[in-house]
Length: 316
Ligand code: G3H
Ligand code: 13P
Ligand code: ZN
Image 1 (cartoon, helix red, strand yellow):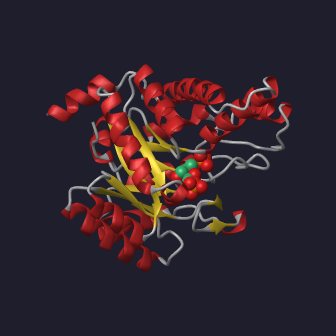
Image 2 (cartoon, rainbow, N blue to C red):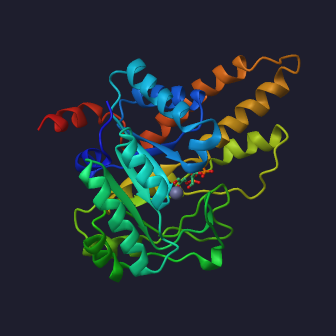
């Protein structure tokens, strides 16, 4: 069942975070739904601009409609990840998405508010909800690359004004994470002090943490042992998810980790079976391994076992 992120956040706020996972193809969709059903967790499926054009946006949307039928107990939101204004409007008009992210974090404060408000007005008129971003993460996203030196933590003093004037329903905050597999080169970490200040000014308002892959070191080691070259890859300690959830983070974005599972499985399977040229054997291993990974991630997020509670809260 497709619901809005707002409905999921209402149940999660202050207790756990909902995993927001990016997908690109059918194997990821199957592994994602299976993993969430195995752990009885609500979840958010994220489609980036790049994912929507990888095969065709209609292909991805059709796969999600099919998954909704194949897994009738699933409760999930369909969310546009890092949208620009035009893509947000297209997704709002499509009638398929339940939530969009407008990422105008590269613009000035006032311009970010103006763009976000236009998207929020259009989304709310059609029953969708909107995530916006204030501050800038480091790393590479599809339409914008931010050098670490240019990354800007969210200014808590601006957060309330931003939310009030823009009308957004949740806020992505920059608190020291970055996108991709190389998040920290030294002893940097998350700025819980900033998060705490934001929550103080916006009590009860859902916050979002991007760039939250944990880049498991055993995964990286296996990739490198099978011919990969990922020296120095490092992510967010998943022990920080629950403390973040207590401070108002209701959505935690994970994409890179899924790519690492894909990379490890395919490298290992093709090395182990050099005679194989069939896509299905490694594909099957990937779906099972990705499902296992999603279930373990949900345990760290605290979303494991929350599905029945969410279902009950939807009826209220
Ligand atoms: O934040 C970016 C997401 O990881 C999506 O990545 O634009 O390469 O699909 P992508
Ligand atoms: P990672 O690169 O850490 O997986 O972050 C994904 C993300 O923020 C998607 O919006
Ligand atoms: Zn992101």
